[in-house]
Length: 141
Image (cartoon, rainbow, N blue to C red):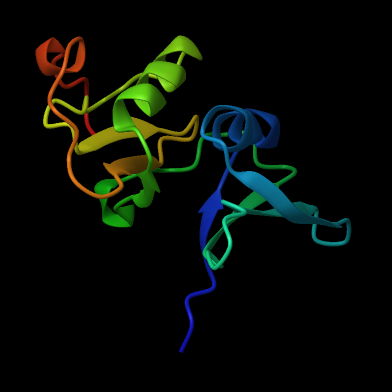
């Protein structure tokens, strides 16, 4: 058995791609438009050698209301080389850090559709540092 992908429904495909590609750093691997079904599928991945995991963004063209979100989904998780730098880059791009990396190891952000994204420091935790050690949690993740 091999993991293929996680599917996320998104209301605004451009906003989702801005978050996952422009801000988080994933790459668009392939896209298919299905005119008869009125939806688009976009598959994203890290592009790292040996990392075959993918996210499938499903955009239903005629769905204007936000999709219901809930904790039942859980989260996506990505290992990052420098959690402090990653969070600083995301914050500078306007992304709310819902759970700052106070421990130098773990943080949470959300996509525009409310999907939780966990960021984990690759290898050992970094030494806790400001501004992260002083920032409070924001909302739910």
